[in-house]
Image (cartoon, rainbow, N blue to C red; front, side):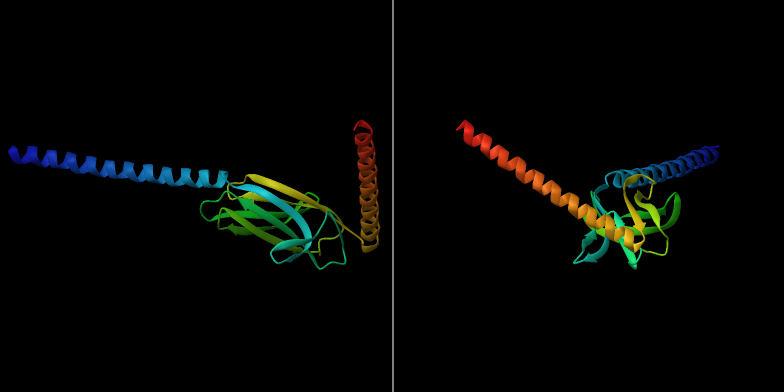
Length: 184
């Protein structure tokens, strides 16, 4: 009888130990997945720019309208907030059609990264979304691909508008100075 009682007691201890071990493993698994969600949610898109080149790890030729005579365009991003390596995707669209998704590593608390797309997508409007592994969209940038002649005309108009804005600012500054002189 003593042996049976001892055997039953020993069986109960073994079973409870196995259950306890499984419970610990489940808790650790939940902690790991929670940490991954917390890590991902801390990512912030600090900067996103579409450009015609990357020079010295910086965007060059930044704009929203690009000529179809370029070979490719780039999406430059600066992502902050990672405490460990994380992944983001640059998802390129032309119109509503997804062209490609490029997976990029974010390896520090402040990380610059970029992807590029060959301009074989045709003319029209597109955008790039920056998406976390969990599917959260951190931000997006829009662009337009135009025939070379149209792009040059639009760029010239943009330069003219910028020059006019500068002239207007200069006129406003002059009138402010005049008003200040009258008050003194």
